[in-house]
Image 1: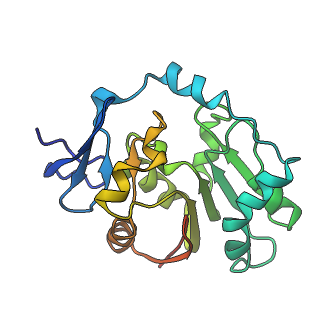
Image 2: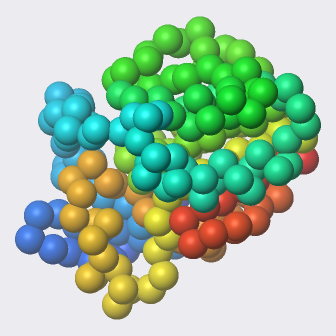
Length: 212
């Protein structure tokens, strides 16, 4: 069965992998690998998984992890530019790091900071760390973030990237039941071209895009 891609909405997809729990399909257009809706958790089940996270701005190890995006992105930002941390989670930390560096920040999270008015603002940069792999409708969500971004602004993502089919079948990342969308460099390049962004990959799990 072919499923409609949740990123580019193309209906041409094929089975990429199947394990004991669910199926993974790949879009023929943008190369996104995604889990079709019948295998998604309910909202309550999804939140229960996130409630187990213990992230905190007081955790030095978590800050080191976030530095993989914070450092290359902050080097591009003018002093005082304003940002949004999208999918900030139960213990917002990246926004604290940017505020400490002089950047006013807003947080949004569907479960922990669901203030819709935040998404009506305009920002110079938007971060989403370990978020896009959880999105059941990444095309819609990313389009919304683009509308919040000022011209010349940056999108910064952290997510592990697909390499090839052999690695995918052994990948720990697909074992998380909340992970339903898997991006490769090809997928990010496709989305950047389609959305009017340049793209660079400062690290193995980081992506920085600039709006033209």
